Length: 90
Image (cartoon, rainbow, N blue to C red; front, top):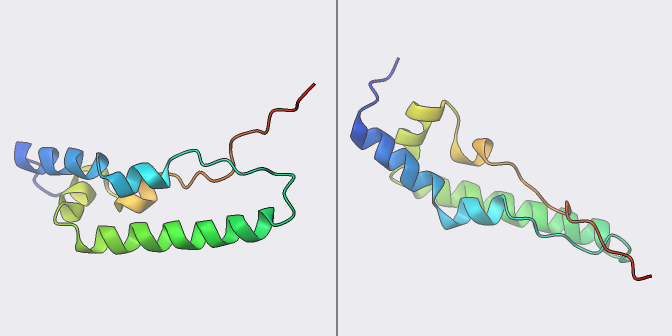
């Protein structure tokens, strides 16, 4: 088991506050009635996944995050795309 010091915990919290992780877990919510909905969702998933993996691979806090939480940051934060429901106009 890895030694978890206060410094390691601080670095893990910095990783949790990363803007790339907030983009990954943001509720984007596309219009599900759109003709190109599935194509847009596939493209967004690929782009966001690549962006977060690339940013995590160069981040100096990734190793400390793994020590504290046991998973990589992009595995810890869920990828939420299209979770927002479209409100119908009555």
